[in-house]
Amino acid sequence: MQLENSEQIRNLAVVGHNDSGKTTLLAGLLYTGGVLNRQNRVEDGNTVTDFDDEEVRRGISIGLAVCYTPWSDGAAHYKVNLIDCPGSGIFVHESSSGMRAADAALLCVNAASPTQVMAEKAWEIAGEMDQPVMFHLTKMDRDNIDFAGCIAELQENFDRMALPVQIPIGAGKDFAGVVDLLSRKAHLYDRDGAGRSQASEPPADLADQIDDWRNKLTEAVAESDDELMEAYFENGDLTQEQLVQGLKAAIRSRALFPVTMSSGGHGVGNSALLDTVVQLLPSPVDAPPIPAADLGGEPVELDRGDGAPVSAILFKTMNDPFTGRISLLRVAAGDMGSDTVYWNAGREEAERVGHLMHMQGKNGEDVPRLVEGDIGGVAKLKSSATGDSITSRERPVKLGFPSPPVAAISFAIEPKTKGDEEKIGEAVSRLVEEDPSLRAGRDPQTGEFLLSGAGQLHVEIAVSKLKSRSKVEVILHPPKVPYREAIKRTAVGHGRHKKQSGGRGQFADCTITMEPVATPEEYEFVDEIFGGSIPQNYRPAVEKGLLEAAGRGYLAGYPVGNFRVRSRTASTTTSTPRRWPSRSPARSPSRTRWQRRCRPSSNRS
Image 1 (tube, helix red, strand yellow):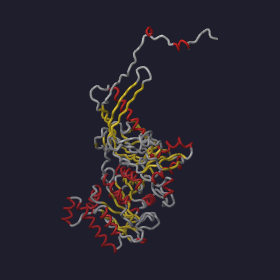
Image 2 (image 1 turned 90 degrees about the vertical axis):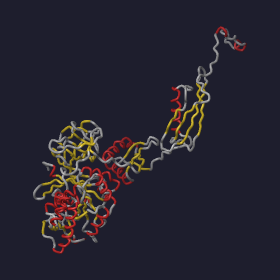
Image 3 (image 1 turned 180 degrees about the vertical axis):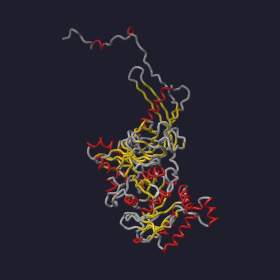
Image 4 (image 1 turned 135 degrees about the vertical axis):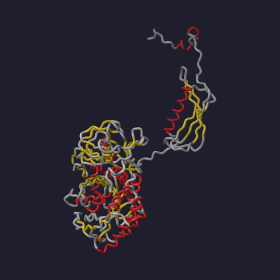
């Protein structure tokens, strides 16, 4: 599917809590859009976006994945890029990376339990990125669903301007479709999973609800703009065009947050959701640009439109044992072409971009170019990694990208067999490249190889990937604790070195004062020797000796930290050793009787 302009694109990050139905919803949207010929299911392990062996085995999303579906509203054709983001808290960096590449967030909320931890976290990230949010109530076919209660809870926990643009037809097992409040049309569905419907007149018993919710939506839109407010006061209502255009502007400015709904397993609401996405959510042209800075770190504004210099952000790296290394990227400005040399702004080196692809999970379809705002993939980049900016060499810029979180837990790993020792380093480096929130390296104090992550499950999944992908089995165990020693109070130390083995000999005398400091790991050496009592070239040896002794420790052999040393002038500072008087051969004493008696004789047999 080759696009001609950015107006045809909608980039949507699908976020929310684990088990809120995100992957199931995406599978249904792909079926509704004609990408798939049947409804795929998480339980069957055949969804497009959960393709990793660990995802299939555990039944959860581990890394973000990209897919797209074509869609038409009757007047124009669109490409809806969908980024499936993990819902577990240990993979929050994957979610923030996916949201950075999107223009809006579809925040999936379980209708049976609207308040969930990762939903709130995704809401916070969207606020930090100033990104529009559309709430989506999933699993509307569950029993005891209270639609009005869900909206009230969303308004209480997120924002009072979370308002529905659809209302449900039926409840629980009788959930059969939705009514679009903008068009006042009903969308009824068969429960076959196809997710397509035909617009019809809404049920008569919903007329009062439709009027009530539409009036609330109209008032909220009027509040978001002064001109619309004046028109609303003058006429008592807004025209259809004023309502739609005002709603789109309010969503872009985060003054209003629309609410949609569906039952992903049965496809109820899928087509209505796609219609709402292309009608209300911003295209890359209307969305705020990705923050950028020049090589000196000063903020700059990206040039966009025809002829603009190319700028793209790599937001995910995938390493597949069969297809190899694939980098997912979002084109922020300009049109990116295949088989072209660009510039890695962060590493300051050239990078050749080969065949560009539109991605469906781990599979790609070659395209000659990616237009501004599009999302795609490229295989086998030489040195670029997640978070790098690929730009034109004439105007290099660095695009903003979230930093990976600090690791919360570490495990020491060692191979089960000696033959795997050499494989571990390379295999782990590929995992870290794919998931920057992992950390790996050897502890300089204990000598152990440590693998760190956001939680124990995070590390265990990485170890499982080592086994399945690289055929490397490792043993996990708690790391050794690198204890430290410290002093409690001020103390004075005195040392003397004397070596008289002949010749000039060696002699040194040193007095120091050690005192504790509050800052962890701080060490300070203060030279308080005044005048020339000790030559300057001898003083660094004192500090070197202190550091060597601090590395060995005193009590238990652990390094000593948190101290300050003051070097003082010793009471005796003689640096020239005593010399014995020399004797000339002429005045040397005659041999003793014992020496003459023991002199060897040449005549002795």
